[in-house]
Image (cartoon, rainbow, N blue to C red; front, side, top):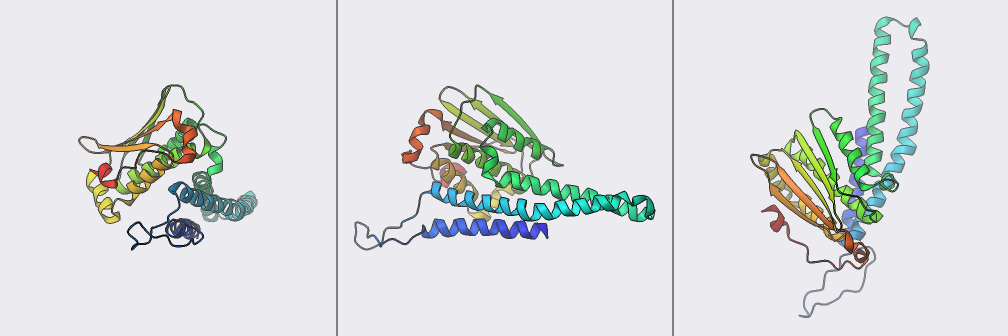
Length: 276
């Protein structure tokens, strides 16, 4: 039940973002290219697409908290009341109730983590370092995956939009490493200097499984990461790690923060530039 709700909600968010990306909101009069033959395609900036997606993430997060969270809390309360009478219950029933309570607590914790990952609000009151470190701790608590976090240099405040985009990029890289390459170890290094912020994410995942996934999706995951990076003026490159694994380096020029509203950045590299 919980899994179905989450999958439907996330599917709605992705579908909404795709519609916005393809149709660009309100229809505008068709423009003709210089050749006078083909109409010029009009797509809204990727940064706006991200805003729509984040809005849907926020809505889903609120629904999970207000609806599902409330129901689970009531179930937990009812179970606590039943457990108070456990002495009067047969031992095998008491044992089952303990198992139910354990599973319920696990479900509540899972929902909390999903809400934390979905909602952009959580990152407003914390630094990028802290947000990524918390993400590392949550993933490290999962069985089968070890996540190592390192930070160096002196952090500087960055705007909310850039901070959220950088966090989402790291979040996506973690997800790809775990789901699509079966990585056992992931490391993230955040380095600050006077002009640049560099985030390096490295894993020891299977190159074969990763390439197999990229072929099936035509490299869309990396293309979306490139678009998100370009929307805030960041650069992204990937390097193969011997004997196996992947290293992705995100670089963001701290001096250009005020210029991001104009979207005047160098041309975005193609997927082929990054995938090769």
